[in-house]
Amino acid sequence: MQTFLFSPTPEDTSYPEDTGRGIAQILAENPPLGEGMMRLHHALNTIFTFDHILLTYATEYREEEQYFLFPDVSGTEKIPLNSFREQLLVLRNGPKKVIRIGNQDDHGVTLGLISRIFPGSRFSVMIMRAILSRQLICSLSFIRIRKRGTFEHQHVTLAFSLFDMLMDYCRRQVRPSRRREAPEEDSRFLSVTELPGMKQVTDMIWQVARQQCPVLLLGESGTGKEVVAETLYRASARVDAPFIKVNCGGIPDSLIDSELFGHEKGSFTGAIHTRKGVFERAHRGMLLLDEIGELPPAGQTRLLRILQDGVLERIGGSEEQQIDIRIIAATHRDLSRMVQEGRFRADLYFRLDVFPIVIPPLRERPEDIPLLIHFLTAQKCRQYWVRQIPSPSAQNMRELLSYPWPGNIRELNNAVERAVILWIGDMRRPFTISASDRFSPAQAVPPAAGYPESPPAEKPEPLNMAVIRHIQKALVWSNGKISGAGGAAEILELHPNTLRAKMRKLGLLP
Image 1 (cartoon, one colour):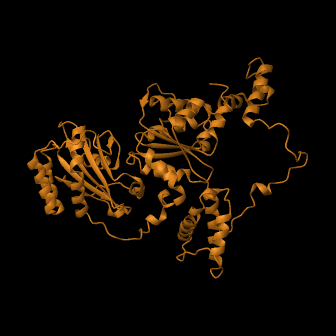
Image 2: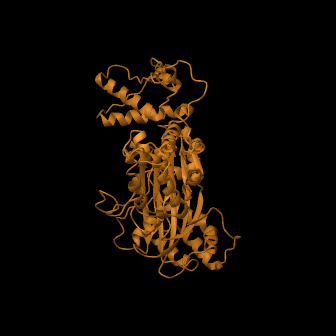
């Protein structure tokens, strides 16, 4: 899909003057929406040549999303628009004027709606979208069905010349309610856009959301990388497609290929049926690879091929499949250092590191703490069926703001839950959230007996590197033999299969 913030060609209103006057007269009369769309359909068809005109609008409230199609198509009145509260991201960060042209193969909320209204049809669409008063997102779409051709750049130029007039009419016709409080279902989710300390992250999400490149989310554990990934997905053009999350560190090494890439029936012992991997299930959508630094070498190699060629082959399969997928990777590890130490493929790292987003730890954004505490307290009270929502005292809040929160939002969540449970036991006592520092580095466990209290002169090497060198010594001793009498497995007192699996994980075997 092509996006235009400005006219792609010099302004040239090459439609008849009387047509322009006719459109202006219709808009000036401000007819009701049904009549107005019918008259605009007739007038604008002399310029663009299209079959249907579609008006959609949305606010930050889910139930206020609506659309109007002319000419109407029977049976479509219950089709959902499928927009979300992350419209806030567009409302607060998006450009006020956008025109897009695309077709049924592109992604997007409006395109998804059109595909559901006209299932199986091939179409071309030109979408005019405006943000009105930072409270309303309004889109006017012109849809060509069958073989009328596609919209071109000259149509975008003509649309820009009519943009302000058309959107002013739409603004007068749609009247969302003026409530100031979100409904209760919305209060169960705290958007990244509502956190002032995440402003830079929100800006970066908006810049990259509509692109197709991989995004690498970096930050300490508990900073909210999964929530940022979810927001990025909701703001993307793939919001109508699947969004699948997988924790690379939570899958056993022996199953990781099957889980990620799928397998054919009979490809290995226990493969009693064909299975689609998460890459295949996320086709046309997004895939969050959380803890990407835990992915073993074999999985890194296969992931690199998907990123390079968009091609997937199941385990035990012989056919390649084209996969349209966008990768969001997340990790709390230092991948660049892992590359230097040989624990992460350099070529895969540079493929993922196209657009890194660093999520600041909670100690660097204390302005978010009061909002998070209020949200988490309300959430825990709902969970424990408590109607009254307490608040910490001013002194308690000052203590919480001065605490470094080494566990970030995860630690804050636990502290709030602990406080709510204690307060429920006696609601007459003050509601106090205790920031525990018992796990801080300053109070580390004293060294065990037999270990020196002062650090060694030379920094120890990473454990995996020590294991690699130990296995290599055993292989040299056994002349490269792994199993059998005198083999490396026997020397290391390991089962041969266990040793081979460990060698594959460390990159010593293909």
